[in-house]
Length: 111
Image 1 (cartoon, rainbow, N blue to C red):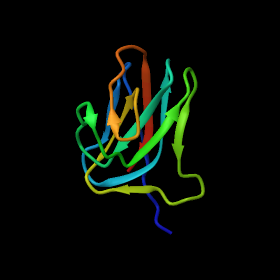
Image 2 (cartoon, rainbow, N blue to C red):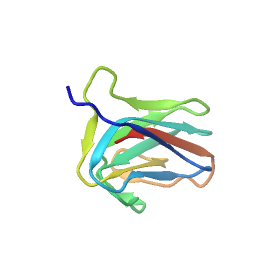
Image 3 (tube, rainbow, N blue to C red):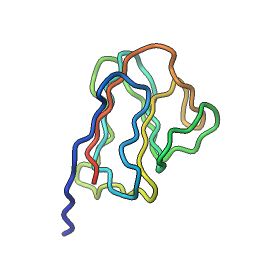
Image 4 (cartoon, rainbow, N blue to C red):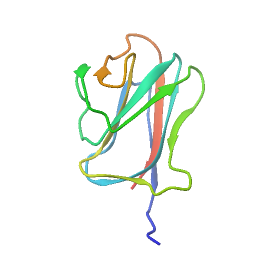
């Protein structure tokens, strides 16, 4: 069994995206707490893509005012080859549109 030294990483203030890793690593889980419903797009990348056409690694719908998660319960964590970035979007899955309003909190456990 491989053991990872997972580190929690989270937003320091409201933001529409967060870079969790700037190198190859492991993502154990990720959460977003949005004030408005949105989509969460995750990328194997070190930078946040601009609005427009995208190819995300992960996508999930996030409900307003509650913690929404991408969790690998009972499954191996996800390995990323470049890094890990999550952002919120008003559209999905292949178009990124940054919301103009709302507050967003991100957190994840990475290695």
